[in-house]
Image (cartoon, rainbow, N blue to C red; front, side, top):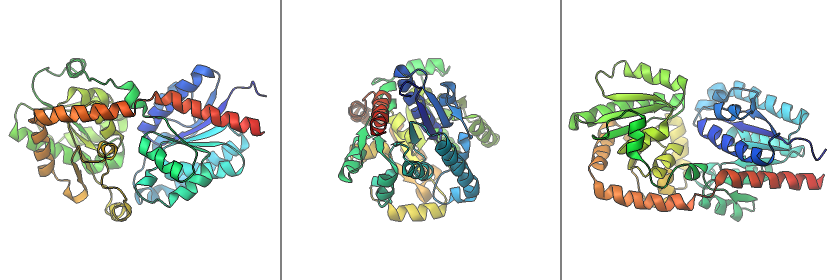
Length: 386
């Protein structure tokens, strides 16, 4: 029985989780090449052999209010996963991000004796801090990407490992702008702005046209500008292409994926708040962070927020390194003004590069390997108790 292949349940809800899950799977496969993975997976995890019982896109909904529109479907999906894993128990269940969905699964599975790990801390340190009680009941071990998150869990006696961020391991300390431009067939001279309005349908719906309008204003001020816009997946590409029908002669290159290359090739980045801001920071890029949600979600969240910033560069630094233009303030004029100011400020670019490099080193911890070691430790503890 001890020598049977490991069975590991995994559920991810979006592209960033799929990337984390793939890194974790690859690290686990180094010591357990016959391990069996199943649950909800994106294309990267499926390429490594994870069987996806439901499409990941079903979980890719944001906010507090928006998921209510698909609540029956999400509840059926969660019940199906719980029933599956109870009927065929894995050695460990790992919920990767998607806390509102995964914590419910983890709570049910832990009650029947299945070990649970949650990878990527919910923003419980930022808002809805009462969730820590549910997390403590649902999770045997929390894996955090950022050091201040682990400190929060230790204060609340939740077993935790700070694993660092896999992107800090993957991305070089010194980016190669000229190499990125060569790969994308973008001229080596001339200013480039990268536009990243998000990976979810609702994000692109709220930010896509705004970012294009901002690009138009920037172009009016600087006719030599070029723009690059990576589409996170085929569905987002179709959504973006529809917006570009009325974009006229805007000099914009739309890419399929390749978000890291797009940012690496750019002088400045305009992006939706989220993991992308961390990626831009690791690529040492001046940026402007923006975000919009449905009005009710914003009204609720803004009253619960316990931190002064929403973007990871600012949270990690403990001060404002990058501007955040959010909700009603997010209009084309201020976004364009901020982008153009950063485009022409070489002194700021040098200072940001130094600050970002220091943070990069702090979270560069061989994250996927550390996460795999923590997961295997949880499994070993469970087996000893049996």
